[in-house]
Amino acid sequence: MNEFAGRRVETARRQLAARFKSAAIDSAELDAHMLLGAVLKLDLTGMITAASRTLTENEAAALEAFTRRRLGGEPVARILGQKEFWGLPLKLSAATLVPRPDTETVVEFALQILRAEGALEKPLRIADLGTGTGAILLALLSEIPTASGIGTDISTEALKTARANALALGIGDRATFVACDYASGLPGRFDLIVSNPPYIRSADIADLAVEVREHDPVAALDGGDDGLDAYRALIPQAAGLLAGNGALVVESGIGQSEAIEALMTAAGLVPAGPPRPDLAGIPRAVSGRKLP
Image (cartoon, rainbow, N blue to C red):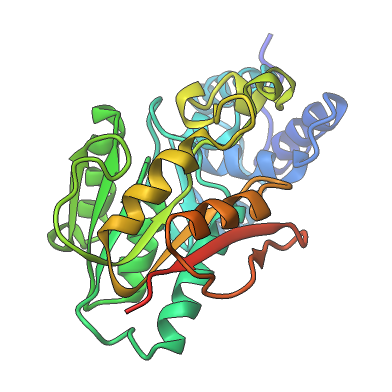
């Protein structure tokens, strides 16, 4: 029996949150709001206005289906097929990671570096290696109207998703997407190169939350035995493509920032500043700059 059938909107929301709490889902209230709002096609204000109306049979059925998927460990973003990043709505696909707030630290650090150089008004050329949804590249292009960029990925499905996101955001004319392994297929010089590569140690993947290990693509998570395989590949490539004074900014896993800085130094880059911490205080974004 569908427990949401014949329920008022507010009653259904409370029941849904209670089911999530009983399943030890930390974000129970938020998840209930998001899933019910998606079913009703209403934002928070609309849900408050509609609080006393009764769910239709189809709405109750859709909400129950969403509920079972969430209780099965599927993240809300996967259920809805969309995730907000840097205030931008981004579509997802099976080949892309769900963009996470920690990755916004890379965007913040890159903008800080460019701002310090007075470069935000210049016609910058940006590359995003392993772009996935296009999150980092599209966030930067949304902040720098004079910039253009290239996103790379080995997955053509991911590239289709990134391209669709660029078009939906109205910046498709400034974003190009190329199928290659990190920077291996890129020509020319770049003022800024960014990346959120796979950095989870292979042995640790089995211990990740079910929302991650069963729903994010393993290729976008697995960084090899020590989590640094991707950095060993992309840092020398990026160093060869940076213009003079250009910067590389990458996301770092917990405890990896020093090793990444060492790889950048070995590739001839100098730090553009200390690693930037995320909201939890973890060094999350690491930078290197090519001397003029």
